[in-house]
Length: 92
Image (cartoon, rainbow, N blue to C red):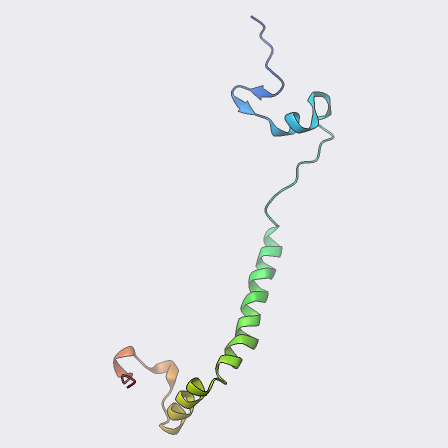
């Protein structure tokens, strides 16, 4: 038996670069990544949070039912950020 390894399957591991590029072109073949870089992911998440915080939530606050609840809290001088769920009255 020959001691040389198969150029495609080395010790049971499949080398995709050799299978796609061919045996002699391994060094010149470009392998693309499927995952974007970390800074791009961070930018995407930050942008999504910014859109929600600066656009979506202010528009939700303009819905009549939400606006009515906000006005009720302001009239009663209730700080919504300091409320506990046990202090909230049930809506009927």
